[in-house]
Structures are given as C-alpha cells and as structure tokens.
Image (cartoon, rainbow, N blue to C red; front, side):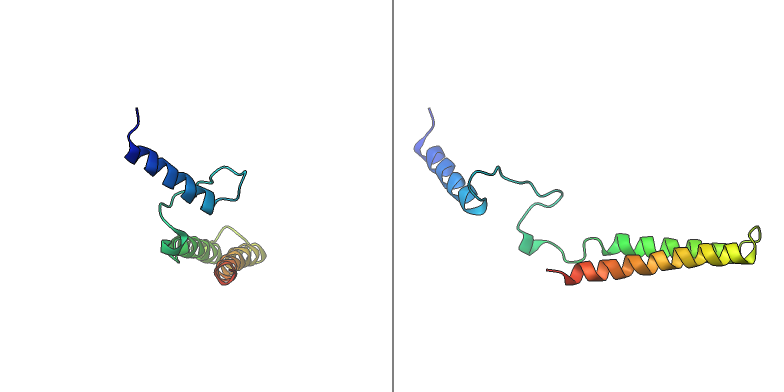
Length: 99
C-alpha cells in the first residue's frame, strides 16, 4: 500500500512533467547536464574550441618549418590548418550569438 504522501508526490510529479512536455511526447533527457537550462554554464565548450584552434595553429606552424615538403606544399598545408582554426573560432562565435 502506498501512503497518502507518496500518492501526493506522484500526482505533483505528473503535473510538473505535463507542464514541461507537450502532450503525447515522452520526456526528453538532456545529456550531461542536471538542472535547468538557466543554470547551464555559458562557455561549456570554449575550452575544446580553443584547444582545437591552438592544435591546428601548431600543425600549421610545423608545416611551415618542415624541411621535407617543397614551398608550395608547405604553404597549402599551413594555410589549410590556419583557415580551419579561424573557421572553428568564427563558427563558435556565430553559434554563441544565435538564440
């Protein structure tokens, strides 16, 4: 037998779930974060973006210094790595601006 308190808690939970989710759809779990979206950190992926950009810049610098490639190949590879780093940072910035 369930007590009156347990029944009341179950009823309240159902009401809260019904208010948060559109009818007919199962509850959706948000991966990796417990709590409201209002409490979510604003820069949770900034570290990954900065590390990725620095790694790509390092690769570009390595190709510039590398001796085994001719000048054209070094320029192409380093330009591609640097362009990718810039694109990653710009994409992150645009993603943060979107609501």
